[in-house]
Image 1 (spheres, rainbow, N blue to C red):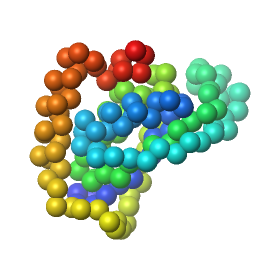
Image 2 (image 1 turned 45 degrees about the vertical axis):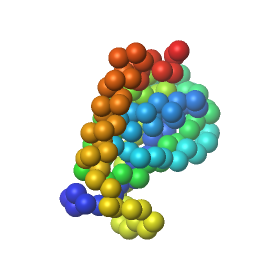
Image 3 (image 1 turned 180 degrees about the vertical axis):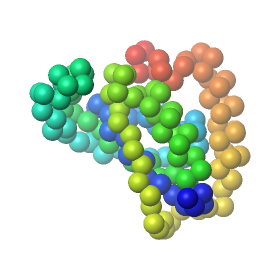
Length: 134
Protein backbone atom coordinates (compact mmCIF):
# COMPACT_ATOMS: atom_id res chain seq x y z
CA UNK A 1 0.00 0.00 0.00
CA UNK A 2 1.21 3.47 -0.83
CA UNK A 3 1.49 5.24 2.54
CA UNK A 4 1.72 8.62 0.79
CA UNK A 5 -1.72 8.24 -0.82
CA UNK A 6 -5.17 9.15 0.45
CA UNK A 7 -8.29 7.32 1.58
CA UNK A 8 -11.85 8.57 1.92
CA UNK A 9 -13.45 7.51 5.19
CA UNK A 10 -17.24 7.33 5.19
CA UNK A 11 -19.07 7.12 8.49
CA UNK A 12 -22.84 6.73 8.64
CA UNK A 13 -24.31 7.71 12.03
CA UNK A 14 -27.67 8.59 13.50
CA UNK A 15 -28.58 12.23 13.04
CA UNK A 16 -26.86 14.49 15.57
CA UNK A 17 -23.69 12.42 16.04
CA UNK A 18 -21.46 13.77 13.26
CA UNK A 19 -19.62 16.05 15.71
CA UNK A 20 -18.58 13.01 17.74
CA UNK A 21 -17.22 11.40 14.55
CA UNK A 22 -15.18 14.49 13.74
CA UNK A 23 -13.94 14.85 17.34
CA UNK A 24 -12.61 11.28 17.23
CA UNK A 25 -11.08 11.77 13.76
CA UNK A 26 -9.37 15.05 14.67
CA UNK A 27 -7.62 13.46 17.64
CA UNK A 28 -5.95 11.11 15.14
CA UNK A 29 -4.96 13.82 12.67
CA UNK A 30 -7.95 14.51 10.42
CA UNK A 31 -8.19 18.19 9.54
CA UNK A 32 -11.85 18.35 8.51
CA UNK A 33 -14.73 16.56 6.91
CA UNK A 34 -18.04 16.98 5.14
CA UNK A 35 -21.43 16.08 6.64
CA UNK A 36 -24.22 14.95 4.33
CA UNK A 37 -27.79 14.55 5.62
CA UNK A 38 -29.28 11.20 4.64
CA UNK A 39 -32.15 8.82 5.26
CA UNK A 40 -31.67 5.11 6.02
CA UNK A 41 -33.74 2.42 4.31
CA UNK A 42 -33.22 -0.60 6.58
CA UNK A 43 -36.16 -2.97 7.05
CA UNK A 44 -37.71 -3.94 10.38
CA UNK A 45 -36.08 -7.39 10.11
CA UNK A 46 -32.69 -5.69 10.39
CA UNK A 47 -33.59 -4.38 13.85
CA UNK A 48 -34.39 -7.90 15.03
CA UNK A 49 -31.35 -9.47 13.37
CA UNK A 50 -28.81 -7.06 14.89
CA UNK A 51 -30.82 -6.32 18.05
CA UNK A 52 -30.58 -2.56 17.52
CA UNK A 53 -33.14 0.15 16.89
CA UNK A 54 -33.00 1.76 13.46
CA UNK A 55 -33.32 5.53 13.22
CA UNK A 56 -34.07 6.59 9.63
CA UNK A 57 -32.49 10.07 9.88
CA UNK A 58 -28.74 9.73 9.28
CA UNK A 59 -25.64 11.80 8.72
CA UNK A 60 -22.79 10.67 6.48
CA UNK A 61 -19.41 12.07 7.41
CA UNK A 62 -16.81 12.01 4.63
CA UNK A 63 -13.19 12.55 5.66
CA UNK A 64 -10.25 12.60 3.25
CA UNK A 65 -7.11 11.41 5.06
CA UNK A 66 -3.60 10.22 4.37
CA UNK A 67 -3.23 6.43 4.30
CA UNK A 68 -0.87 6.46 7.27
CA UNK A 69 -3.54 7.76 9.69
CA UNK A 70 -6.60 5.97 8.26
CA UNK A 71 -6.50 2.94 10.59
CA UNK A 72 -6.14 5.11 13.70
CA UNK A 73 -9.12 7.21 12.64
CA UNK A 74 -11.32 4.20 11.88
CA UNK A 75 -10.47 2.70 15.27
CA UNK A 76 -11.25 5.97 17.08
CA UNK A 77 -14.57 6.31 15.27
CA UNK A 78 -15.51 2.73 16.13
CA UNK A 79 -14.55 3.26 19.77
CA UNK A 80 -16.55 6.51 20.16
CA UNK A 81 -19.56 6.13 17.85
CA UNK A 82 -19.65 2.48 16.78
CA UNK A 83 -22.75 0.28 16.54
CA UNK A 84 -22.79 -0.26 20.32
CA UNK A 85 -23.16 3.50 20.92
CA UNK A 86 -26.21 5.74 20.54
CA UNK A 87 -24.72 7.05 17.30
CA UNK A 88 -24.75 3.49 15.88
CA UNK A 89 -21.96 4.36 13.47
CA UNK A 90 -20.72 2.26 10.60
CA UNK A 91 -17.43 3.37 9.05
CA UNK A 92 -15.46 2.22 6.04
CA UNK A 93 -12.77 3.58 3.76
CA UNK A 94 -12.13 3.55 0.04
CA UNK A 95 -8.88 4.33 -1.75
CA UNK A 96 -8.60 7.65 -3.58
CA UNK A 97 -6.69 7.64 -6.86
CA UNK A 98 -6.10 11.36 -7.29
CA UNK A 99 -6.45 14.46 -5.12
CA UNK A 100 -6.46 18.07 -6.23
CA UNK A 101 -6.49 21.23 -4.13
CA UNK A 102 -4.83 19.94 -0.97
CA UNK A 103 -1.62 21.28 0.50
CA UNK A 104 0.72 18.41 1.29
CA UNK A 105 3.38 20.62 2.82
CA UNK A 106 1.89 20.27 6.33
CA UNK A 107 3.65 17.76 8.57
CA UNK A 108 0.70 15.60 9.69
CA UNK A 109 2.66 13.98 12.53
CA UNK A 110 3.49 17.41 13.96
CA UNK A 111 -0.15 18.55 13.75
CA UNK A 112 -1.37 15.31 15.37
CA UNK A 113 1.15 15.66 18.19
CA UNK A 114 0.09 19.26 18.88
CA UNK A 115 -3.64 18.40 18.74
CA UNK A 116 -3.21 15.35 21.01
CA UNK A 117 -1.67 17.55 23.69
CA UNK A 118 -4.58 19.99 23.44
CA UNK A 119 -7.19 17.21 23.43
CA UNK A 120 -5.53 15.33 26.31
CA UNK A 121 -5.64 18.48 28.40
CA UNK A 122 -9.33 19.06 27.61
CA UNK A 123 -10.19 15.37 28.19
CA UNK A 124 -9.35 15.83 31.84
CA UNK A 125 -12.58 17.81 32.15
CA UNK A 126 -14.75 16.50 29.28
CA UNK A 127 -14.06 13.08 27.73
CA UNK A 128 -15.08 12.64 24.09
CA UNK A 129 -17.48 9.80 24.87
CA UNK A 130 -19.51 12.08 27.18
CA UNK A 131 -19.76 15.21 25.02
CA UNK A 132 -23.00 14.12 23.30
CA UNK A 133 -24.82 13.15 26.51
CA UNK A 134 -24.15 16.39 28.36
